[in-house]
Image (cartoon, rainbow, N blue to C red; front, side):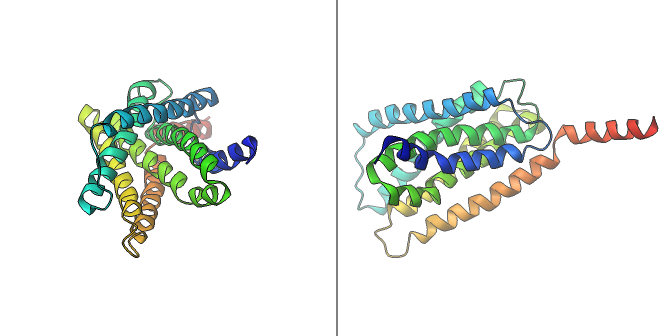
Length: 237
């Protein structure tokens, strides 16, 4: 396959999701340059994941015929490592940024980092698997990474603006890992007839919860109060 065609197939679903998240930021949209940086950090998190996974896989061997060992594989060796690699960039690079100034921004930045991760991962998979893999991942893996990011960002938004306690940000990592692990686990044991439905169910659940998270943080924006006050002042004058 031609490289540019592969690149377009791999990146198109992430771009579509990224635009959706961007336009859902109703009150104060994030700087484009910072979003590009966030996406680049997501690419870096993919590379970090590969380095960590390579090191661990040389030590730990998984029997893929074992349902129990596949659980360790899915939740710890894949989901936790991947989500941790994203989390460290979101939490310690983007979280302190002054542009992260409302709860919804947690979703914007975490999803953008996740899409950077999914973008590079998708290029690797599509280059190897071709058009069919691109279409399948367009409706599965890429949206899944976006939902993991949305759930992570939701809890980071709560941690920064509601509770303001460090341990609450760990909920972000835990929830993203839980949904990621469940999604992967059902695919990993798909040799059991019909069990793959669990992966689709976990993805749908993640999408529904992500939409709710977006709505909640839209309503919790401090800019709503500012706009209301400005409108009242305008009427009074």
